[in-house]
Picture 1 (cartoon, rainbow, N blue to C red):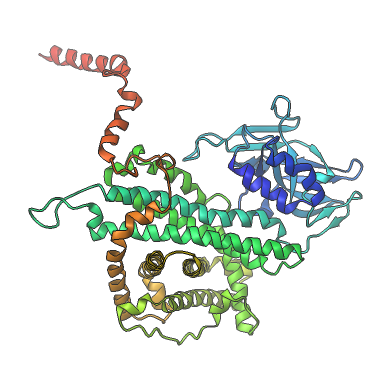
Picture 2: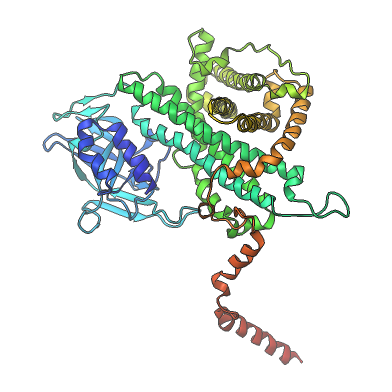
Length: 565
């Protein structure tokens, strides 16, 4: 029921009036109705303006008539829609007095409260098996002229009056509030997903022994190999970074909501674009990180006993739900290009975007490895990289426009630069948020020291994985990259004695991990054996398939051999 307590509840909370809250909130929080959020259609997902479901206002009855006019307009993919929910917040094109006002949200009852059957004009079903989320009935919804009362439109910011006149919201993107909140939470959520993989792989690496470092000595733990540390430790640091960044983004959203109640919406454009980009940046990184962690467990990582197949199936879809990642990064890029234009004109920028005003001729002064432990130096490196990627994108688009290309073609011709700019911007945001969060945490000095090491290590790892872009910025030289590598290697040794404690601090119980490899007690091999013996195929010594298939196959082959003799 995750979507009931997130998208459904939040849509009502953020998009409905106080009067509407009185009607719906108690039913939602008491679970006397169960709901979901139905936006994505069979033919359209992230491109909201292309959606086809309509909600046409009938002044004679003061009702909205919701309709799926085409096959591709049916809602497709919403979680819990197929069989579970009784209601949904449905995104549809608002049409009143013959004019289309674009996507708005509507509360629609889908099933009878008596016997749970689909209501007249409503076709519901499950869309079938998926890569993951086997327990969730992602569904389809087809509406055939379904009528709902006027007051079931979400009317906090925009309204349709009884006579059909329309009052526009004070900001065009206010309907995105729920999506912004979900994307903010998703950053933390994927961090927790990555923390599961990091916990499993790290604990297993503290048990598994292999090969030999010194001839004649006992086999060392695989965590003592530098190559294994290079797989594990960046993912531990990244999990911490994403969880703490998710908290920060959540706080930013709450601050915006408080301002919005006072009629101040200036923070929304940056918050919307940042949450979109961070959703893409963190989910993509998490998907790749989980695969690194799975492979770090060798062959056992491929077994369901490791829990990696289930975790991967649960988190890989995050790259496409709540907005496909490429589209999300391009949304961020639109805000970045507007900011770049403002910077060129000398207009005031938001505090975070002030990196666009950095002197492009500034150079890093680091001369020894320890200089790259200074967070000001690291943040400047990330800021110059982001500045370079954003300004390059802006100049390339401007060059295309000067050649006479229209905006759409110029934009499409520069996706390479735009995606890189958004990624660099989001990477800077995570490093900055991670650093601020660690400095603000109330903890013992020794705890803060190792957390600071994680921040430094995360930043150094990002530089090494994106060397080309950091060199292009002009802030860091090739020789200084060698210093970064040396400092990165030295921090591996600092993290090594703390690695197990760092993943234990995620506080993931064995029941929640569901992993034999990641058991807290480290008793892996005995429990792998028990897990294998409990497999359904091992209930009988001789499987039924022997009598059905294998025995006839062997007997037939024996007859053939005998006939040849």
